[in-house]
Every structure is written in C-alpha cells, then in structure tokens.
Image 1 (cartoon, rainbow, N blue to C red):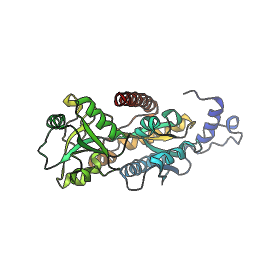
Image 2 (image 1 turned 90 degrees about the vertical axis):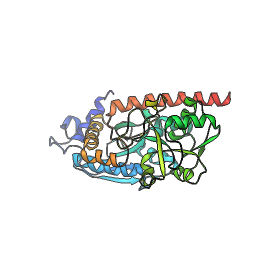
Image 3 (image 1 turned 180 degrees about the vertical axis):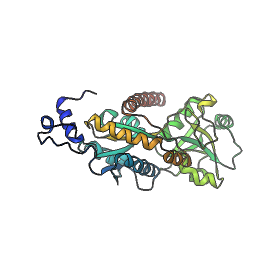
Image 4 (image 1 turned 135 degrees about the vertical axis):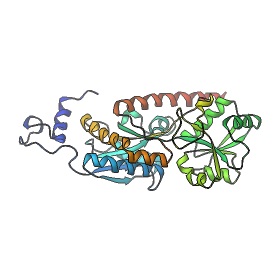
Length: 325
C-alpha cells in the first residue's frame, strides 16, 4: 500500500519517530505506539466462543504492546453494528475489531450494509474454526461414506444449520451438491443444531465442534467429518477433503482496523498478535477448544479475504442459478 508524505508525517507523530518537520512540535521524541490502552470491539455477545477467543488472544498481545485492550461487545445486526463501529472509528490503531470471514467475504453478497474486505484494514488472522457434520451417538451411521450412501438413498434427509446464507448453511449446500444427496437444510438458530439432532427433528447437524464439547464429553453425539483441508488437532474424525469430497468453506477469525490506519501501526499490531497466536498458552487453549491457532499477516490476510469474497460470490451465484433452473 502506498503511504503518502502526509500520512508518514502523522505516523511519525503517532510512533515518536519524527522531529519538528513531521509534528510541528519540539524535537523531543514521543513514546512509541501505543502510549495508552486500546479498544477491542467484539461484534458478538459476551461469553460466546468468538468473544472468549478474542479476549484470550488480546490479553496475550497486550503483553507485547505493554498496553491493555479494553474489550467492548457491540452486538446486533448479525455483527454489522460492531463492524461498522470499528470501520468508522479514527484510524489511529487504538480501536480494532475481531471479525470472521463470513462477515466480509460472504455477508456482502447477501446482506445489505455488510462491508467488503476493501473497506477495512486487515491486521492478523488469529484462529481457524472448523465446522463439522455430526449425528446422534446412537445412530448406526459411523463414517462419511456410510452417511453419504444413506443420504443418497433417503431424499429429504434433514440437516440442521444455524441460519440461511451462513458458512454452515453453505457447507451443507456444497456437501449436497458434491455428493448428489437431496438434503433438506433447515435453519434452527445459532447453536441450536445439537438440540435439533438430539430431539430427532434433524438427522444431522453442521456446527463448530467447540460448541459441541459438552455433547462430546457426555457421548451424546458423533462427529462424522470435518469441513477442512487439513486434520484438526483434537478431532479424530476425517476431513471431507481426505475422503475425496472437496467441500471446505472454513471459517476463520481475524483482527482488523479502520481503513487508513498507518501501515507501521498495523504492522506493530500484527507483530503483537503473531506473538500471541504463536504462544504455547494460546495454542493449548486452541487445542482444548477444538480450533486451530493460525496466523496470517496483513498482506496475506487481505489477499485471502479478497479471494474468498470472489469465491463465495461465484458459488452463491451458481447455486441461485441452479435453484432457479
């Protein structure tokens, strides 16, 4: 990204790297960024899995920055309110947010007012959250192959997802398309898929395994397959990809800043989050919560978001055309 002379001057003041020519002040060197606490906007409710992840990684990044993150939960509008609050904040680096790929790569194609990747400054990917297909533990189906065969021979098999046009919904739809199974994909509400499978109103569900931990510990559900390219630590179930079913719309979470944030500030924040993600503490937390601690810097993250934005737009267009036909 090109940084103008004007921005470099502002950046110099923020980072304490400039003298009179940049700041119009004394030749005293100011403290380096950050000089006070930062705000972390989380667009979901306190206590939710993304909220817990955000708080954990921010606490670790704060050690590198030598300043605390003050977490603020700005909920509503399926995350849009919190995301817009960050995007409209002053681009100084003191307000950052945590978002998910669905917020920026999927939502703009289906939700009015959702922001595209180009409308924020990505900082760092911090987590890759797998999605799994699961059934009741008492089900005689014990493998991906057996489930696909059963689904093909039982048109209308019900699969519970959270809501329409989510990544969970998309994974279920892509699974149906890839296997030729005629699935009845039913939105049941966020986090309610396990209950739907347990009470028999759905024969299978698609959900993040971190939400399923209580059901796994009590042996009430069985994970059949993981929508991912690579195996996930802590999960013994195979990936669909490894079984020749190339379906893997993988959710990931990342930190972002308002557009126009000085790149040196973005890089400083990215370094802090990289250290947090690479720490033994965060990796241990990720294993226990059944997700992957993954890092990507600002450039790689922007490239991935842009690619995902184009991919999901194309897939949704193809699926809508197929349904209309």
